[in-house]
Image (cartoon, rainbow, N blue to C red; front, side, top):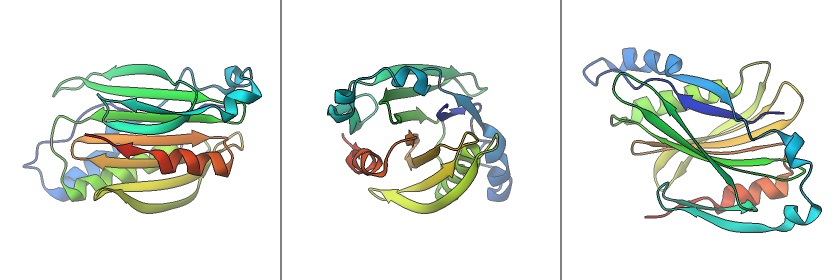
Length: 195
């Protein structure tokens, strides 16, 4: 079972392009990439106590705080683009029941409200590839920034949930796969931005 992670392949077209053209350009800008350390095979080796050992994790560089089961592993992926490199930072923790992930990536150009909605649409579509099926989605926000909450069934039958937020030029993803509802709500409810 793999948790799907968004990787930004290229950046948005110049702002002088019409909104309709920019909206169509969003879809191919994202590609799905499996997270190498998110396989639940290794998570099955965790002890039952690890499931209860939730602790606050903060990233001063990422500007967030969240409760996670244990200390997350950190990975950074760099995507090459014409306008410059885009780094995606991933923080992953696993229990025998599931995987919990927070990631963020920064865009080089400002994204207006219309582009944000198109980006959220494209991100949602990215989670439902390779046989996965969308179960539900709804618009959400975080301190006035647009977001999307999705729930999907992966091709192996596991249930994934993700909250995606666009805060200024930064895309945050707060994701789970295969976890029980109580843990998911604890995880999602604890995610906060910090200055």
